[in-house]
Image 1 (cartoon, rainbow, N blue to C red):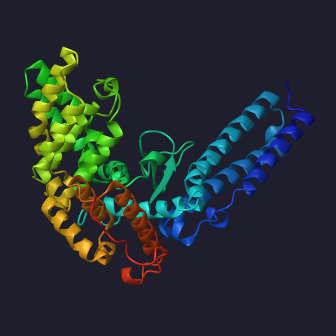
Image 2: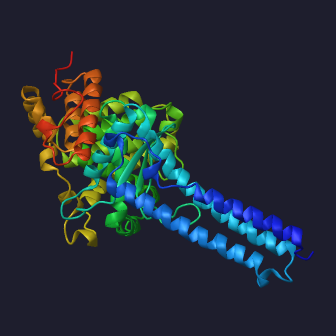
Image 3: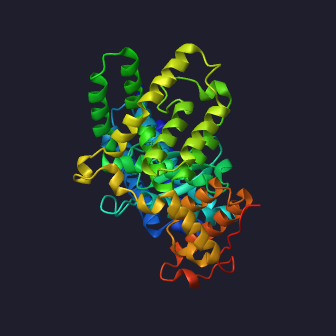
Length: 442
């Protein structure tokens, strides 16, 4: 059917309506009512608004091109069906651009929530610290943390494709609300940061290649299957390794809290799942901790985990697979720690993390010093604070309720420190009125 006058008027009106809706999409800097301490970093805010502004420019050009076609000679002799098809494609593109706006809006709107907004800003600071590796990642991309329902955390990495096209301008990390308790939140946060770090360093490709070479050396089918699974799970494994290397035993505590589920889930083997079987995942976390931070606490955690989830009642095939995987842990952890990707210019992965200052004996000594002078805690980087508090909790020197209180105070402090970076920690106008005091566990 030819494109008659009525059809053309209808499509012009609908296209103009899209343009008027586009006019209502304003920069977040004009919309978000968050406190200064709750706001995302200026770098992140600028990157998000710049990305969305560029999308609006492209979309407006498409709208005007379509209007010019409808009003000009291009539409003469065209059919109503073709004109409607052009409009439908334009509308799909329009909706895709709006969905990108909503992705960031959901994250930024939470910054206006009482307490949560400021804590999210503090978590932004912690994520930035978790992503930095001197000499390897000195200028990390901006990170924005937000809360959502659900069991697990997740990340939308920087420069990954967004719905409708275009690259994500910031790393978006989703944290479950139920994780906002004590230092356990750090485990989930730094694990997700590890996904971004692995991408920046190009770890996954080189590790998969190295694991494939190891797998091919085995003729035993069970051993080959074990290394095949490690190769398949390497993305999640590297992120867990990143978390342990930054947080010490606090990472293992947090992971155990996440995967402490009914037995059917803890022992479920799903080759399609990118996550390791939860039972062996905790075992791997413990093995990594023992390799990086030797201490008797890791053996105690291993016995505790096996007491919670003994293998005796697990079906024989699953039990044999898990024991085979467990037997590979020492070599696998050594391979991870000593991996030398080209991005590190000859250095092993273990050498770019702050392992000396995260040794358990040093964390214990630091906690004792902080008990004498709590102001020292405000001078430490966020991941070190989480590591010290996690170690103190593991040693039963810190009550979980006190830990939660301290973490909340420190999140406030980090948020304010990001807002007023020129202000020294002891002078920060913190609403908590003075440094948080540390007390021993009851």
